[in-house]
Structure formats: C-alpha cells, structure tokens
Length: 88
Image (tube, rainbow, N blue to C red):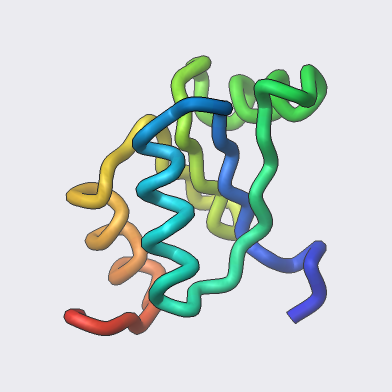
C-alpha cells in the first residue's frame, strides 16, 4: 500500500500511550504512517482539527478517528475497521 494511503497515527514525543500504540501496530504487522506533532506544528493543527483536542495519540483510519486512546480502546476500534491481528 502506498504510504499516502496508510492510516495516520499522530503521536507526541515522550507520550507512553503513543509508544504503546506504535508498538502494538508494528508488532501486529498493521501498516500505518507515524506523524510526530511535537515536531510539526502543521500536523499538530491537523490532529487538533480532526480530533477536536490536543491529546495524543490520535489514529486517523481512512477518515475514522480514534482520539486519546490506550490499547483497550484501540483493539475494538481496529476490529470495527475489519483489521485482523493475533489474539483477535
């Protein structure tokens, strides 16, 4: 899948939930593009516009938004998007 078509995970530097979300997606072979909003003000503005908040992580799954989440919210969200991963 071309990188432009991958879901976007917005993260902040030093955010443990962001690190956990990135690790989970990578460990389960789920393709995504990571954007660090700490280093990119334009990306931070986009994240805030789509999620209506400044907290991270935010996952933009082809227009479906999961904001300020942990793994307990990520797993059911991915299932709802028909994503298959181990322990599903």
